[in-house]
Image 1 (cartoon, helix red, strand yellow):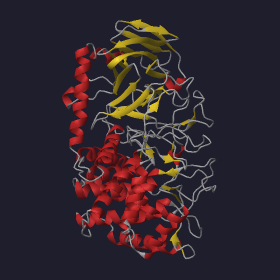
Image 2 (cartoon, helix red, strand yellow; image 1 turned 135 degrees about the vertical axis):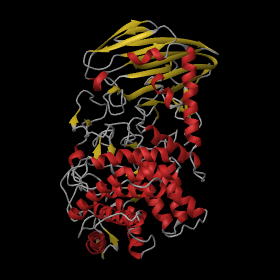
Image 3 (tube, helix red, strand yellow; image 1 turned 30 degrees about the vertical axis):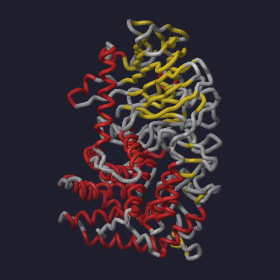
Image 4 (cartoon, helix red, strand yellow; image 1 turned 120 degrees about the vertical axis):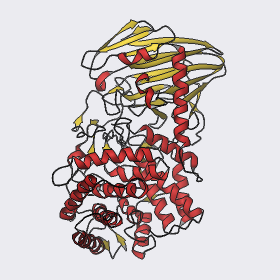
Amino acid sequence: MGHPSQHIAHAELPVDARGVIGNMKTSALVSIRGAIDFMCYPRIDSPTLFASLLDKEHGGAFSIAPRESDANVKQMYLPETNVLLTRFMTGEGVCELLDLMPVPSSEARVDDVPNCVMRIVRLVYGRMTLDVKCDPRFNYARAKHTAHAVEKGVEFKPADDFPPMQLRASVPLSIEDDGARAVLEMNEGDSACFALGAVDEMPKLDSKEKFDGMLSETIGFWKEWSSRSTYRGRYREVVLRSALTLKLLSSDEYGAIVAAPTFGLPEAQDGSRRWDYRFTWIRDAAFSVYALLRLGYTGEAERFMRWIAERNRDCSSDGSLSVMYAVDGEQAMEEAELSSLATSVPGQVFIGNGARDQTQLDVYGALLDSVYLYNKYGAAISYQGWRHVTRTVDYVVEHWHEADHGIWEFRNGTRPLLHSRLMCWVTVDRALRLAQKRSLPAPLATWFETRDDIHRDIHEQFWSEDLQAFVQTPGSSTLDASALMMPLVRFIGPKDPRWTGTLDAIGRELRVDPLIFRYTRGDTLDGLPGMEGGFSACSFWYAEALARAGRVDEGRLVFEKMLAYANHVGLFSEEVSTSGEAMGNFPQALTHLALISAAYQLDRDLDRTHVAWT
């Protein structure tokens, strides 16, 4: 995590040269150059206000940076918080920039805290000149706006039907090209404060005392939240940073957790595969609930379970669910190309996600696994809730043998997939366990028969004698890293010869050092252009599978090598190229969830904790 000092001058910043801040409504990325260059407002899935991360020229940014171009930069989080500190150092002076979105310290304070970004600059030593430039670009840079001076700041009024924004400042601001400007000539001890939010939010921040109060309240909130973690293992710092990141990606209002706060960041080095991840995937549910419960965050797990239960209640009459949803539980946005952000890298940018209309049978396993886990460690399911669950299980009983698009959301047709089949087994298995444990009414005979049928089908159809491994589709020789879930969901013993054969094959075919690729590299399996990177979550699954197979030292080395791919503040992107660059949307929830799970397993094995068979 401790990268060497970074100089501010060089041209192109890597995607992960940023920290993330947020308030469980929305979030923003802050680069090591002191620029907020990606932010959606007022919600995490709203249109962008700043997107120069995707398009330097048209995207818009809010930057506070030293005039001296070769300043040294260090960026860190204040301990156990999501308050970001960027420090600029020159021979003449040292300056600190604090970035945060204020959060209320209690339910009672919710209405008093604005949905805004706060930026506080302090000169710690010497002297320095900084330039402040705030250039919003409303509605994915599609809506024009005007700027005019108001008391204590500048108001930005978009032409379309978007909330006008106000930048408040403790220093005078000027207007240039419909943006706000200031030059800060700072000496030791000087400070300046800025806040940007919707016009009707800003009266809540009318004095320096309010600013200071919100800062200390926000720091207090995060520290108190962090202190509730029950994890005491050897990876405490990275696990806590992962938990804090997941909390940022969750919605206070709805309880859902989005996959990532960004869209349009390419998964391939040629600039292609630029999807929108600002939605909640049912698939991530089980991982999220497991991680939150493991860390002692039962409140968050309960809110997410309530959100999931509502989706299950409102699902189609046949019990089928969508793959993903908007944060508020509505249908995810339709996929559309975004031409207003031309992007500095080639490749089309999309908002919305076409995978929302796909059939992905594995989501039911994730749903049932999360219901089962929450029943085990949280609270018992209600009568009504169980009725919705049985309807969904019956849907899977009816459809498990069908082809689908699968976990990797193939865009070139359906096929029978190992991971989907596996998760259909999980659906029925967890439903049976729950029904028996809680003595709930269910067509047990049918469910038992189906579970056995799926078990046999996987062993007979998806096993390759030639490869001595389970394969992605029947009769193929394609390996798939999602098979790493097999021992993790307790389908197969972690030392079963068929499993160890598969683990070895994945290590041979899909691995480059600690990076695990989703499926055989260089093929055209998914019908998409571009060579993608190693999928970070798969690497953590691999580390965990090795540990469970008794190869603890190997698993630990893969895990520790992967930790070196975190950025300077401990955040992970979706993928990593073989040359070590972060690729795909950033930061990604699934990667942080897989990290927490692997850390837990490694601690167990390294401490030789024997877990009784349950």
